[in-house]
Length: 69
Image 1 (cartoon, rainbow, N blue to C red):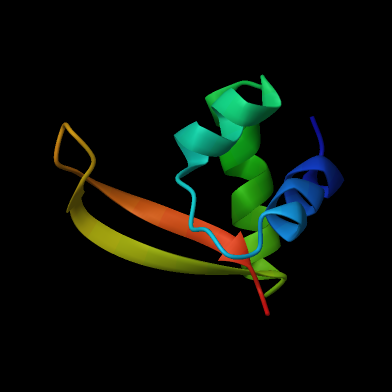
Image 2 (image 1 turned 135 degrees about the horizontal axis):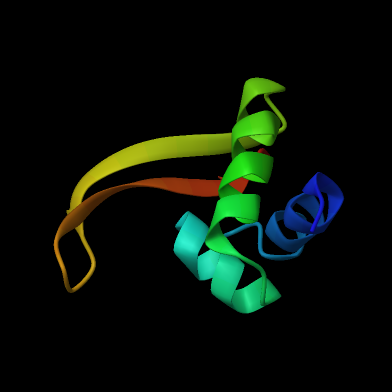
């Protein structure tokens, strides 16, 4: 799993925000490797991120990610 795969996934799905878990599930990759890739992409300003409180059925806090327009 590499940054390019995560970047390409977000680029193909530009209009939607995703959690790292959703990305990992869609790419059939480990959550840890996707999180590492997302951190590097976020640090390089290649993607947008947004912190949300209480999302999803479990009401957990999470970062959401999408391709930078």
